[in-house]
Image (cartoon, rainbow, N blue to C red; front, side, top):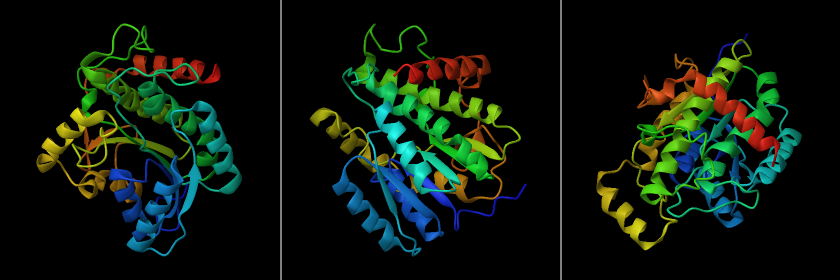
Length: 286
C-alpha cells in the first residue's frame, strides 16, 4: 500500500472550519496544498471563512458543503453530496462541537450535545468510510478534549433525563469520552484497510467556543482568554496529524503532537465496542 506523503493534493473534508481551531487548521492545510472542503451551517460565515482560507495561500479552491451537524438527516444529505462530488476523500476531520448549558433536544429526539459531538460525526464517518477506504491511505481525525477525564458513557441515560449537571459540562465531557472510544474502535475495525484514526485535545483555546450560552459564559470565556491558547496553537496537533507521514499511534489520543494515555474509561475497549453498537442503533432509528 502507498505511504502517506502529506496533505498536498489531498482532499480534506473538515467540519467546524468557519472559526476557531477549525478555521486555523483549514488555513494551514490550505498553505500546505490540501484541497479543502469545509462544512458550514451559516452561508455568510462560510463565505467569510473561505475568503480567509484563500488569503492564507495555497491556491486551491475551497469548497463549501452546507449542513446542520446536529441533525442526522442533514448529515445523511451531507454525506450524499460529498460522495457525489469527490471521487477521493483522503482526510476526514470531525471538528465541529459545542457545549450547551441547558438541556436541549433535537427534532430527531436526541439530546443536542450528544447528537452534535458524537452521533453526527459517528454517522458521517461511517457513511464516508467506504470512500475513505477506496482512497487509502486515508485518515479520520476527531477533536476531543481533556474534559473526558472522570467521565463515563451514560449508557442508561443518553437523553440526560436525570439532570443536566454543572451547566452541561458533564454531558460535554461524556461526549468527548465518546470521541476517544469511537476513535479506538474505528481503528480496530479498519485495521488492514489503510484508514487510520486519531483524536486529539487542542488545549483551552481562545475562540468562539462556549460563547453560545449567554452572557455569563461569555464573561467566563473572556476571563480565561489571557491564559488560553491561540486558535493557531490549538490547531497545531490537528494539522500535524493530517500532514505528518507517521504519527505512530493509530487509534490514539494526542496532545501537543504526542500520543498520551486517556483516562481509564478512555481505554475501555469493551465500552468502545458497546458504544459503537449502540450508536449504530441510534442513527439507524432516526
